[in-house]
Length: 220
Image (cartoon, rainbow, N blue to C red):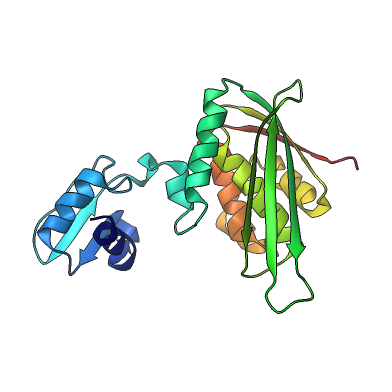
């Protein structure tokens, strides 16, 4: 059953952006029933579905879990959920975070970038460490941005984050966007020279989860 749901969820799904609807083609009626009942993505307050040749499921995108909303196919997706639960269970609202990103095996044929974040309480007692990697469109700056991104994704809502990074680019861009209260018009977003989609996601997460974030240069 898991394979069937996965197949429908990721291979037979077309999004209607204008109507916030999803169209599932070539899906049998029992597939839809199982999706509604078991799948985490589709069981969130569906507004409509039908058992015709083309199945429609309408819902409010704003009700999606923030990890589900921004992370799709990732081997580390469950690690994000597990890490966030640890942070929520810690009952801490003020965190000190150290982020880092780097490129590995740069002289070899297959290059990968590793990034991670470590959460502490204000007494600098370690709460958790999360490390991941990616292997497309490699750059050291993008790795540092990903480190900040996963930090914000797993941070509890309404929490206060003091983030340390050794990336001057991340700090300067973050401060520029913070000046605009993380609210940029489309023209401003397209003017971001690199990684504008990642920065837009970061700004969305900060606003949607009501996070207070300050970033400083890590002292080596």
